[in-house]
Length: 144
Image 1 (tube, rainbow, N blue to C red):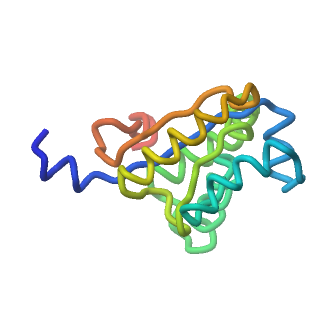
Image 2 (cartoon, one colour; image 1 turned 30 degrees about the horizontal axis):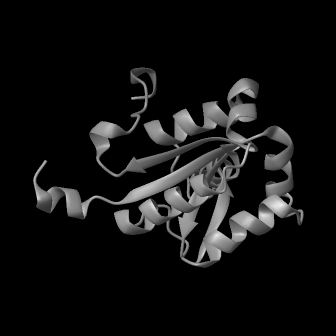
Image 3 (tube, rainbow, N blue to C red; image 1 turned 135 degrees about the vertical axis):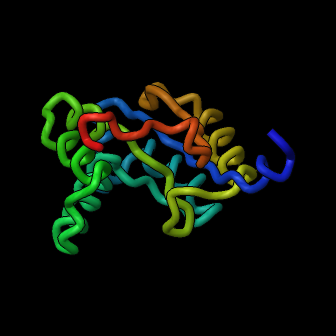
């Protein structure tokens, strides 16, 4: 990958949380964990957004706009209606920075480092993704 392509990529941080912690975060319950993570997020004007909630919002927006004849809508709707996937995505959170789900690598690196530094057992997994389509899941053929 050339340096030019690398610098044009945007990044995203996602964290998977223990179920109880995920419920607290979704319900905005004040806790030591939420205070610690929010102190990091505030430094870059960021917030945690539950993946399930984001998927549900996307589906509702598509339905309101009558944009339901596309693979991403169908795939996402099936995902939120699947009870096993729902449980998974209720515990998965994306870091949005200034309302955006993709941001510069420097910010993603900062977030990843600071969140890992918490050494918090309530965080099951932390991932950094980039905007290169070849690195991201595409809708299965059955939705195309």
